[in-house]
Image 1: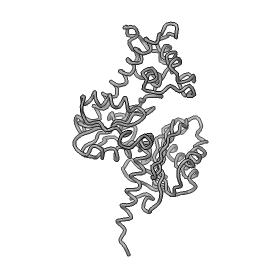
Image 2: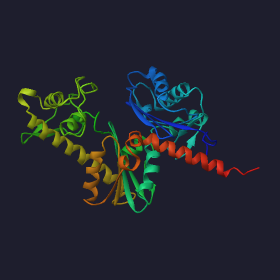
Image 3: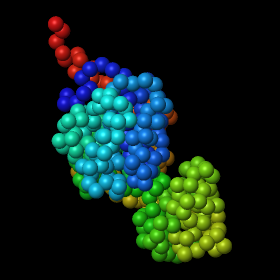
Image 4: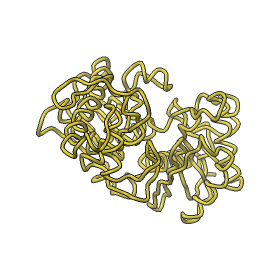
Length: 354
């Protein structure tokens, strides 16, 4: 191993994203914390430090990230180094092992020399561990979050991606920049049916996919949540208002029934887009999948995608069911803890006794 995971210790893993920070402790504790990094990059160290205090004691850190793509950083390399520095400061110099797109852990020195190794590698940690849940035949990991969907081909218990970087994965269909919360609705289609007529959509951030799934009942209403397209609450009434604006209307001309039909049409547009990407991701590597592992805050959508790809009655493994709600809420971080412990133990067992 090229990283610092070669000695025993108690692990915590951080998965630092642009909109959320997730962490998992080897004792089983896991949490997710909303944090809009692109708005407050200078607060990352403080937020990580406060977040770490919510966990049991630890002396070793595993790190992965996607936050390097935030537009508060001029380059991805600069973003990787900023996240790395913040994590080092927040954990008071504890040894850090950084997960790379080469399926290995790396020490801080190696990442400073080649930051691209660490950029957007969290999906691969999850793919490595989740693949074990479908040990035979072709499969797919469908991980749908608030912002993106990871569609990772699996075969015989191993991950088989073609892409490594975000750029490559966008080309292979293995990454789709669409999720169930933060995706602008206007990015799903240029028009959607409204009262039976194909209607052009406003190319404005009037609504997001959160509004679709609030209306469809797949996201919980939360009046205290103001992280919406217009800064108003995540309620059914406000969601209907936001959807109405997409077709140049308002609540006076956009009923609850209109909202439900419109949300179903938008959901279908997203589902069709994910199906095209998943087919592209699998057909060049593992062929048609016979099993799926589903995860993320969009697990319900992931299940529907799996059924659409493979048919009813196929093998679908829910990470929520397999790992529990706590671990699945921070799935990439949980997977990273597993990998860090395994590889540390492997290195220790490989050292000859004196």
